[in-house]
Image (tube, rainbow, N blue to C red; front, side, top):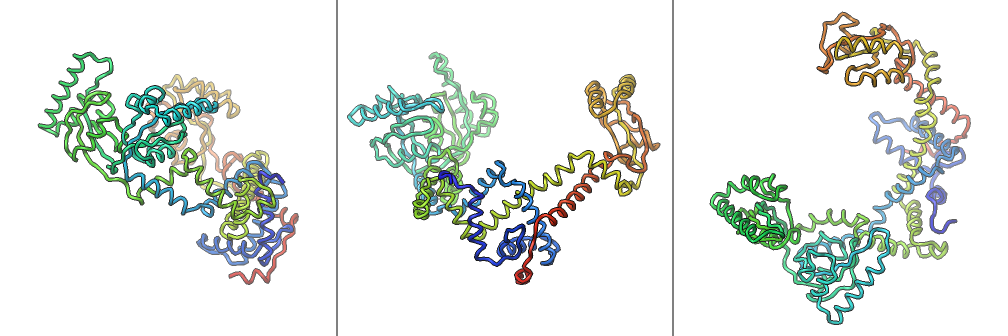
Length: 575
């Protein structure tokens, strides 16, 4: 056995023996026993889904055929297909997830996130960037370690941030990012920010972007989120003193106007704001929390009351006048939980690995005897749990069996019936010719080619070109030749289905084509048929009937090929 992987099918086969030994056998198909529990599960499920429930005998006959098809799929080794095995592995893992979820541990992570969300924490950091994905980052980690060591020895954090941090937004301010709220940054980074005491230096914190040295800052109660609109006058870094003065004069003038008449705020935002994105929305921004906007815009937005307008505020981008539209307090635990669980479920979140580590630890304890016996690694411990679930959890076992056999049945039916009927042109023709009398029409049908053209000259050219058409490929070439000038489609329809055809073939009133660019229409090589003349005239009906015939032939072959024994005594016990 491969110690790094226990095949799904092997697990099922081993487990099935231990399960079926406890069950009465309701039938045996090709040497494989069907336990009463499996039959009852599927029988009751079928009864609940049927408008007119089947009798037990009717269902038993249908079930027998179902098992025969599965036996045929297994004889064809469809269960060894890589696509099938991958599908089963994925379904097995998905189905086991609710059984293997440690809700207590997950709730502890949710509670931790909720507790952090009650505060806003002042964040300071020095960031050393990682290389491109796939590159070695040992040098970057070593550099971060060296910088941290110097800070521990007494080097000034702010000076080191200015010298080494690649986060230019904070490096010029001593590494200060301002106050942040939980849920906006990588988990490991946030945990350091929210748990460090003021002035305390963290160990090296790794994020997808780099390595961080975090310094603890102050905390304050979380303020929730706000909805604001603003008018901005931009002040580029290269602005002259005169340009800066003009921007300040402009924002002051705007402030005086909107405080005198707040109803003008949104119109002025559309007309005068240099933030064109929000300006088109009357200056409105999306909801945001602490740390999501630059200072002092952030502080000003939270400081004013709803419907109040701030005095002009200068940020690194320019001048702003802000009006608060609404505010919400921090989310409750119930509101936060779905969002936190969604983040945790992403492999990009650090807590995803923590959840996986916690699971493996629990499973290793649960299956420690089997692990010692089989000398398996951490990944394979999950396979041991899948096997345990199969033996001990009937719902898991029944659903897994149902999905496995349903997938095998689908693949076998695809090969023996559906694809075969769709692709077997000779078989379809033969079936139609043999059963031609079964295909009748209540009304005559017109068969030909409906042409719509932009004018008479184009129509004449199309007529000449259609004389050379012998098959679908040559018809496609004619369509391409007259693209944009004519519509050319094969038709098979009865009176009343198309007004143009009715006009040409059944004496209906003249009409105009739906597409205004076409002014002329005619039917090329028209014939009126009282019955289908070829299989293609009724392909969908013939295909369905041919599939049914293939299905019947397949079932008859299965009955003669695979032995079936029904335990009537056990069958009668089923209610």
